[in-house]
Length: 131
Image 1 (cartoon, rainbow, N blue to C red):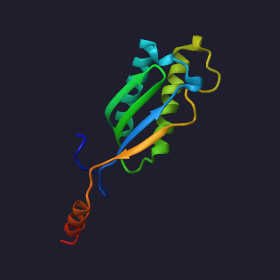
Image 2: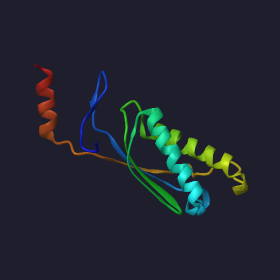
Image 3: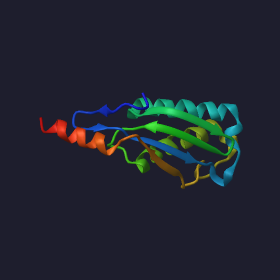
């Protein structure tokens, strides 16, 4: 669920991230349906492996939008390292004709947080901890 708090043994959290990243040189590799599907499948597998939730994904020929909810142990840069690294390696391996030398993706990415917490929610949470 997108609007619910999640818990681990030691934390209660609500962390949603909106990521955008692009292929190197803005190549339109993502208009290939097979590459698009491989990318989606890889992201979904990573979500299971690393316990993050994919809330929305949009793959456009020259960039990807990914909206996820993640555990607090993952920084946004770590999530991007995992996602871009794994998808890039799989694309390079499965599509050698692309002749990708070093990386599928640029090093850059956009990230924004999204949440719905209020001051009142924080106050109530703190008050509940003292009981």
